[in-house]
Length: 113
Length: 111
Image 1 (tube, rainbow over the protein chains, first blue to last red):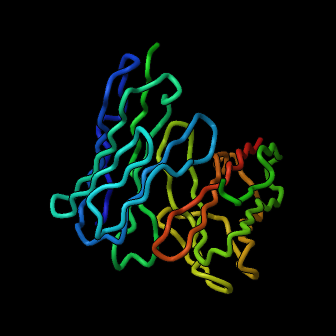
Image 2: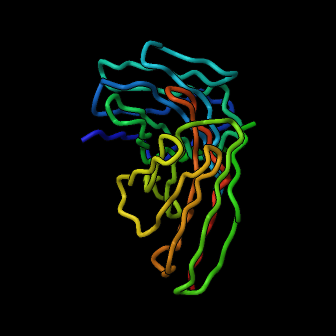
């Protein structure tokens, strides 16, 4: 079964700290992987999309990496700010999965001032 | 800014009523999705579409139905709402192999 797992479920850090969020998936045959941010009671905001042929993508203070062979992706957040507090979700578009996006459970991040 | 819209944002409705949740996108995306999410829980795919006249059930069994008569429009219908349908419903769209965009969601409460 194609599954996506995110650990830890929750993370609390002081402002200014660099941090890494983890995403693992069970099948290395993927088209792409996407990271999202979700604020309480809201929809999802796309952060970064990594195609299967790419190793990493960067946007501002965010850097996402992809290692298909080990079934892992990480989201690195530099110099965290209280405004980064949200739930971060990764979603995988598995090959042969007819275009469905499979989500992890998310990591809820709290950045304390 | 993603051009995908869901209406209504909030809906409180009585048991047994028929409801339709609207989702529209102006990006010409062929793939569209409906996810269900309970508070603090993960997203579950309930329906998806590859294009006009294409609809498929997702991984989570749902009593809702969908239609895709136009590329830009993917409404979700509940024929007879029940309290167990209380949840947040999220709509998304994307082109093949490209970034997915989500609407702001509809928070449904059935009393």
